[in-house]
Image (cartoon, rainbow, N blue to C red; front, top):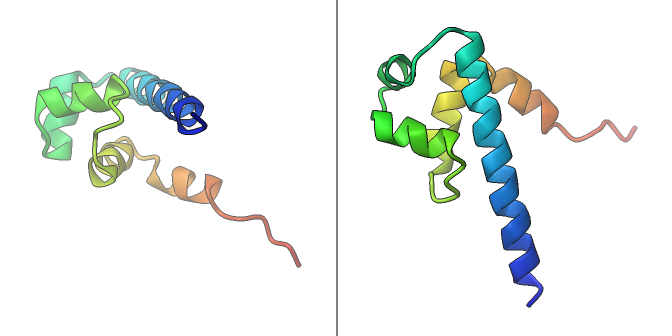
Length: 84
């Protein structure tokens, strides 16, 4: 029972991240087709990423983030705080 709420939160997070990636793509005036080509992914895969499909592989997700120019920002956001 405890895993069900986690799955809901994960699904919600995936959907929000996908929407954010779609917004970044649109800010850069890129079509789905253009992002797919630049990422070396299919149009359907880019749609899955932007749609928040939690079954999309991490490598695929990171490829889209990198293509949009935000891999360094994602990496920085996940850096643990300096505790010293």
